[in-house]
Image (tube, rainbow, N blue to C red; front, side):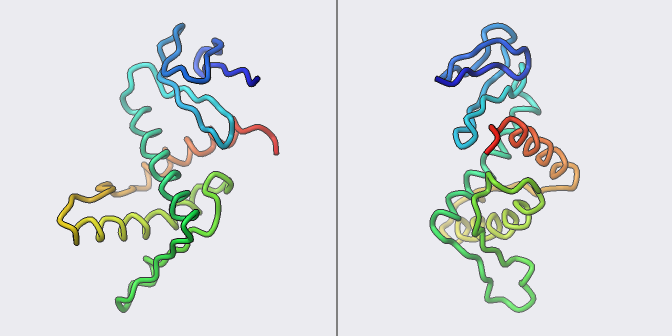
Length: 147
């Protein structure tokens, strides 16, 4: 049985815990890495950062599992081509995920708009946001057990 601890206060927590009973940090499990991560005590910026990261990685993982490729037909849109042909939990370089995420999110938003729905991911990733998400990615990788 794997023992999980809160990354914020090192208190032992249960696999299905949503928050640490000692420090109040919100918790999340990254199942592919068998890691428990603390998201913060107030659920503000930390929660948003983790939420964005998990949305990105989970959507890329789904695209990968379906063999999805983005190959725009419009002239000059080569920058929006993507083929997430890798498990997004594996690369240590977060920029590799961003290079696949941006085209995928543009395609998802375009599909939603064509169906009369709001954007699936209505956010632009600024350099600052990418740096913050890259930090989350490093934390996930550092928490992962050695392969």
